Length: 297
Ligand SMILES: *[C@@H]1O[C@H](CO)[C@@H](O)[C@H](O)[C@H]1NC(C)=O
Ligand SMILES: *[C@@H]1O[C@H](CO)[C@@H](O)[C@H](O)[C@H]1NC(C)=O
Picture (cartoon, rainbow, N blue to C red):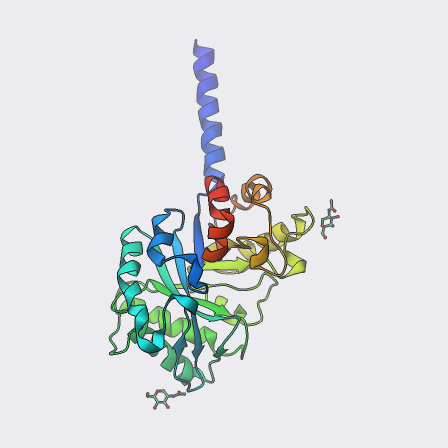
């Protein structure tokens, strides 16, 4: 009897060790670039997402009047996107963080100077965060933060934008900062900003980048890249960014069973592991990807 108890105790200790090195994560999703992906409330109502990035504010900086683009969902110019204010609050009431994503693949944006970065930060604070403006395209809902998806234009001054935005955390509720760099290190547009160490969530795009994405059954490049991100880039949590369907990216789609059986068990050992990011809600609805992987995230 004494022997069995000892064995039980040992098994329990081993179990704690195994649980201790595997970290639970969440799923971040991009919403906003396809009118056929359903509403924000529907996305949040699935219970599968912990973070929603509203995409995109795709025109800003260099003295331009900023513009948001939410595809077929609504038209910011006629103020029809304010209907999402209640949905944002609904998502937040479920504990989901809702961020505005700035940048994207199509648009016109850059930060011409430190002063320009300061102006854009003031605009973002007043228009989408805790500040006040007569023109708030998403209504009076106060978003949880700003996601940097910078893929074109100048590489300059995003570190300043990050500092100015983070400083608003001292004014009102915490402003979360997120970024969606490409997997090669250093990221051309975001490396300097990431070096500030101010980013809470970094969802790395492990796709469209053969040197660091999955291909032909081989996870080596992706896992090696993940290890470089988690060991060299200062960030709160790092997420595995993936296409939610083959059509969601040019290359780098990873079948769900490969993610759950081969990749997640390895990358979850990092204390920096935050979960999985998916592009996008539209493709996730089509493909059921988050449903397939959520049990292992
Ligand atoms: C910043 O904003 C101020 C006040 O609106 C304006 O006078 C100035 O020209 C702006 N600077 C830049 C670089 O856009
Ligand atoms: C997987 O990719 C790595 C890196 O390119 C390579 O060294 C390795 O041989 C590949 N493994 C297989 C089984 O093809």
